[in-house]
Image (cartoon, rainbow, N blue to C red; front, side):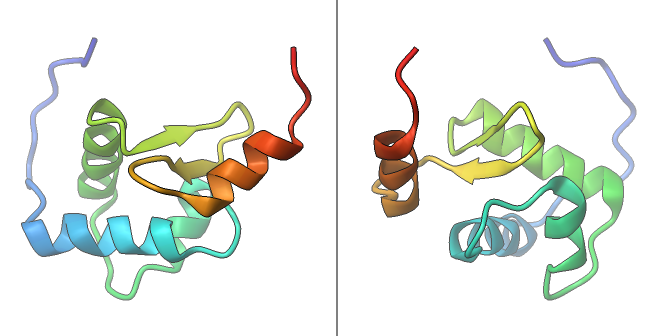
Amino acid sequence: MRKKLQIIHYPRLDTVMMIEDAIRSAKEYPTKAELLRHLPKKVMYQTFNLVLEYLQISNKIIVTKDGRIVWVFADNEKLKRLLAESKKV
């Protein structure tokens, strides 16, 4: 459950779309720090975290145990390949 925080700045739609595009087009699964550094425009850290939380709640991304961000919404070839190569538990 989400903690009640005072939100100073809510993201605009173009910011959310920019972060989505960066995650989708990444050649490798980025960490939060790598993703933030490689965005085309600067984003406040609180706003960036809010967008990532929204994307997780809406089941568009997952964060792996080692902190990598994976785009899982819709048809994702990288995810299919990762699942095919992974060990069954």
